[in-house]
Image (cartoon, rainbow, N blue to C red; front, side):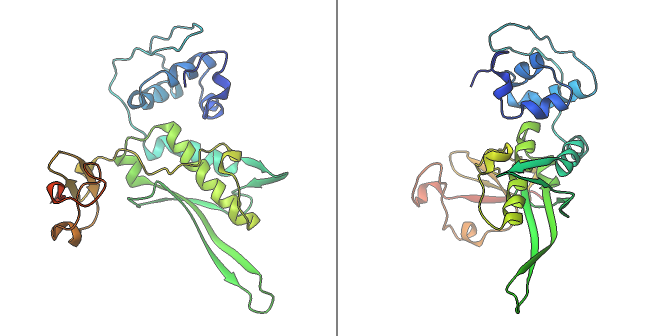
Length: 243
């Protein structure tokens, strides 16, 4: 979707960007910038630099920036995480605050999940009631360092896990979009396969990250699903150990 000053307030992460120091013109410019350049733009705005050339017109705005792209880091995401853990979310007439309800945040080392909602439950065998404890929301610090996810995408991942936490609190189901998150999976992004333990490749050059040794690939029993929707020996996968 193309955003202009007349509709920018409908953008998915408009409120989050405004809280991070953007004005409306800069938010329009942010969405008009290639995803790989947004991290650097966010960094500049947050520290008060505006080296980008921004033109305020009622058409999609482009940003001209010659600086090297700065990817998200654990430190750059920490303020956003703290803000969302303390924020009030209203769902079906009830207010949910993660910190006030006993949820904590921690960084994980997961390589296949950008975010997770973790909790334990203890059921009372006399009353049948289940007590939820050890409630944690996690983001993967490994994927922060090794994926090309933008700040906007990490905000959406955080909101996605908060939606799961709200599900836990009300013991039912909820629409993730009600707290501002998009419901699609958050793991379908590009990961730097050179930083993973294994690189998985096919004869046509498709490449992905592998974190464990695969006997199925080693035995020639898996082919590339991008080259063929069914198993095809012409597209057998191979795995290369990086370290």
